[in-house]
Image (cartoon, rainbow, N blue to C red; front, side):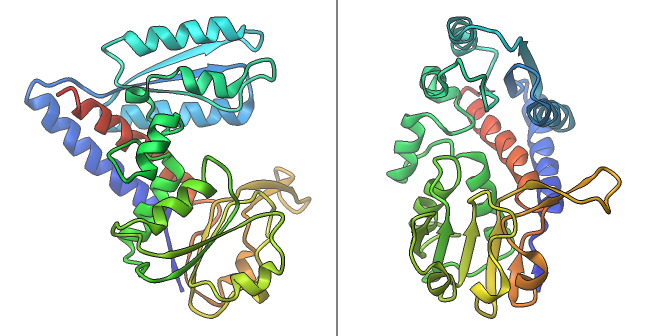
Length: 291
């Protein structure tokens, strides 16, 4: 069994990006600049945005953090987005989700200039990705594809089951895995909460991507030997034996599934670290269109 080490792979990618940034600066070209908009004080969002800013510093990017209070109006947020849309210094930006309930997330995502949408959520980028045209691929699916490619997991002709159909992970993964690309050419089944006889489907899978948000849902009796398993989930589960009172669990029951797997991602340290690395990669791509 081989661990698909997202922590190490993301570190490798950041080193590669940092080298690229050094070359850009040496040539007197524009330094990539990523901005993030954070509305409110959600703890997880603040931690995640902080990690993004730190990652920018690490690779030599410019970064801007725009912090807005919880009671920011939708109109005020849309105005901030328009300022970022027309600012030539900003190559790409993200609006950290989730947003406060009084703000329409879809309306906000639609307002972002697709050329700066380094999260890859705008319908223009989703459409271009679907048509296999150059686009910004959502960071988590992009990271999964990179892990599969770098670890040389055989995907061509493989039977892939994606559990989950979210716009952020499940649906884009199903599209990417079926396309003609290094980590693609697979036959894909999308399963979800309404799927009947799910264990029968997962037992036939060569590769399973679990992205449904239910801790330890996929168990060893649901998979076949030599399966490759990508665990996208991460949930805090109460655990009195831990000093902090909880542990982090993925959508996969690691202990039982890892005994059968040929490749598997750990939680934490698998898919998670790849997301920020690929956000940086998208920002570098956005900047390259200007240089």
